[in-house]
Length: 433
Image 1 (cartoon, helix red, strand yellow):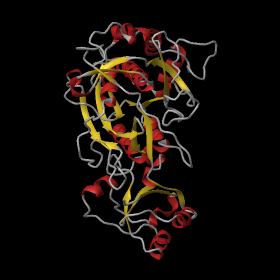
Image 2 (cartoon, rainbow, N blue to C red):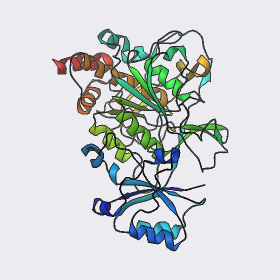
Image 3 (cartoon, rainbow, N blue to C red):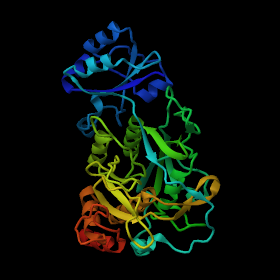
């Protein structure tokens, strides 16, 4: 295993770091541009301990030069040092480097895991109810079914691209799952080829994509069927005892978020949540960047029914989503450590699955795309009127139009309440008028 170290420095030392440092993903595929030094003081520590490394950038600028938004997020100050030999750096070396005054952050790659609620394939062939009725989705679709120019990025396990429900829906796709050098014995499917197509191998991402944009051939039509999808594979499937969980490198998920933003995502759906301990919050810099670009991030709140915080849902500015059952009550599995914004249908949701099939599934993973699709509908209608909704306006609409499930303005488990798209569109129309 060749350890990767993520290091963020302060701006004052940039003139001491080599120029023309390659982006790590480009470097893995093409090692013609090799840089084996970083900063004189760090170089001395590595040399004294007989370790060698390659210097790469953690992020890639969207254009030739870093934009002000990218610099505000600190992307230009964040690097990835890749060890040239197998093994990890000794703790005393990590401590020495961390104590240097110009080092703002240093950590090895971290694998985060997220619960997969589990899909039941082929569970039903006739759809008796439409969970969209609970959120007045048919009313919203009288206003718009979305527009192709509004793009929803699905950061998940990929998608089954040949599914008839998703035909012509996916306009861009990218794979950020590469676990080379890590112990992959418990993983399912391809986890070693970052150039591979982001093909779904477990069904979770396909299920989420169908909720968002399915044609409605053998299932309910998606929430925003005329919107475009961007599929970004950031999670692989890993066996954990008798369960299957999603697992991905947090830093590669960060790169997936930035790539989605830079490639025109208007909304990012993250039906995932990663626990965290230690310094620095997962995804913090890149979420700040997305919000600066007016990209809405919607995330599942988690599925353990506790007040555990899951990221990115627990970050400020992210819409964390809980799930309700078919009676409109918050499910027992909904985690509430994040500041939940709204709740949406998440119990026994029927959607697209692997091998052109269908499946039932329950979880905040299923509730999240109902909200992502709703935001895409709101943005689509504004787009059709020649306007662009801001993150603050979306937040205002959801906060003031959701149906309260308790007497509180904002309940710990239900947020501002159950999504109500009838009232959301009435308020949106008033705002646009």
